[in-house]
Image (cartoon, rainbow, N blue to C red; front, side, top):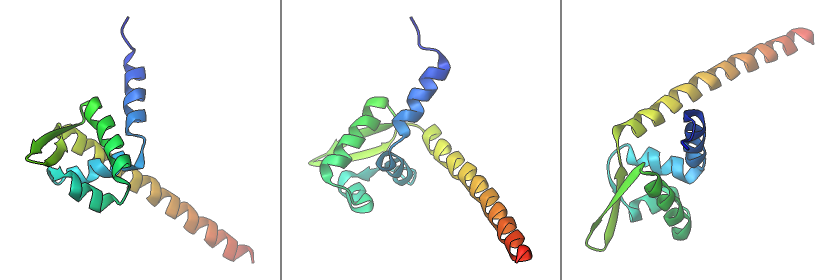
Length: 113
């Protein structure tokens, strides 16, 4: 029995639903990075980063290669970078709408005084 597409999408977005995973994906948009650089940029415990990288790797969103004793991660495909950029655009629009609403509320408050 196959999983409905909407359920598969929900599971995909749930998998993305962790701040460390999102940060890793943002950092990897600029190209492959060794774990030590990810660790320096994200500032979490190594075990926590390792756990989140494993989730991303199992999902197929990131790929890892070993160069000597260094493990380097990269996005598995360009679509992930496009998704991160789309999320940024959507959030920017949402926040801009909130700022406009906040400005209106403050304006109404000043007039009411």
